[in-house]
Amino acid sequence: MKCENRLVFDQEQLDAFIAKPEEGPVCMVNLIKFREKAEYEDGRETDLSGYDAYQLYGGPMGELISQNGGKVIYSSAVDTLICGETDELWDVCVIVEYPSRKGFTDLILSDHVRKVLGVHRRAGLAGQLNIATIQNN
Image 1 (cartoon, rainbow, N blue to C red):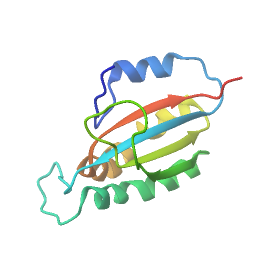
Image 2 (cartoon, helix red, strand yellow):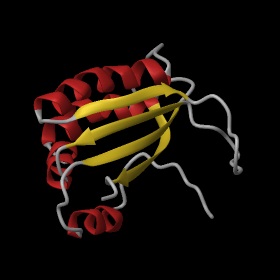
Image 3 (cartoon, rainbow, N blue to C red):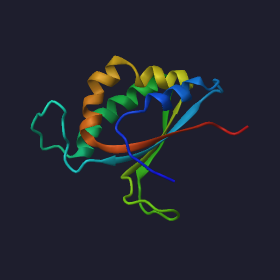
């Protein structure tokens, strides 16, 4: 199995996610890796760590998630890999529940998230895995 962190979604993967039937809430498992030092696309100088830059995205994003019917279910530092193999561990695991697939995509594709908040997300992240999960019936 190949594992590759990315900063942005692959359009083909997003299209496949959107094409699935709405079955109620969807939880996104985010495995996040931060840059040691934030790197802004506009070249601005900063003393922020990747974690600190990401927090400028994460705090407001958490509020938007809540305002749109979602909630952060779980957030913690990644500690130890118990089973499997990877070159490097992620720094944080966050699980966020959205009311629906549409609710998730509407939020992440909004201009405010992409253009305003996304600047800090991209500056802080080295990459992430984002895994959609649904409740088994």
